[in-house]
Length: 114
Length: 114
Image 1: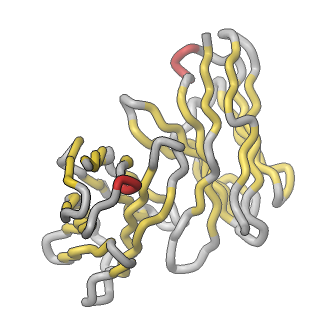
Image 2 (image 1 turned 30 degrees about the vertical axis):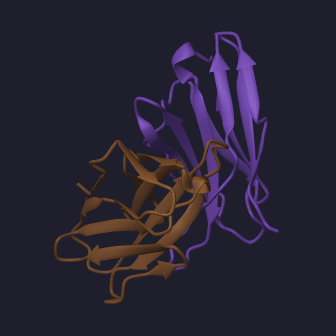
């Protein structure tokens, strides 16, 4: 049963600390997305990769957020330094370039910054 | 700009009854897909149903069906024989700007009463 995995599932940290979230896309998928979900803003696209290359990170605060794909099986999202307003659920999703556009979501990482 | 609007923040339905969730979108494209995702309390985003814009026939998946009106840019989700497990947030989503990017509506929270 292929699925997107994310670690950690929960993270509580102090303001100013570095946070790294990891995602393993479904094997064979070549597109990866990072979303942030908050009550106020809903689901926002932070970054998008195709074949490991970043294509769109316009939704990401550049001064503190960074997203990478070191290899085809791992995507990372880092926040440094973290702030209380970064508290949210972060989702990773993967897909292919088929015409279906369907994205398969991971279970999310709930981040709390104190 | 391409947008997705869900005008019903909350809906409720009695078990075994039928409920319809509305979604409107705006696009200049002629060929695209539309999606409904379900997010139960577990936070997992689950694809409920997909509609291909060039198909006249409305998509159906068991108790879930859509009423797709392309000219009106309307894409509503009908849930028949509602079950307690249908209680969740429902998001309408639309691909934007190519590269499989999805824009999500604000969501509709569905409560199912026994």
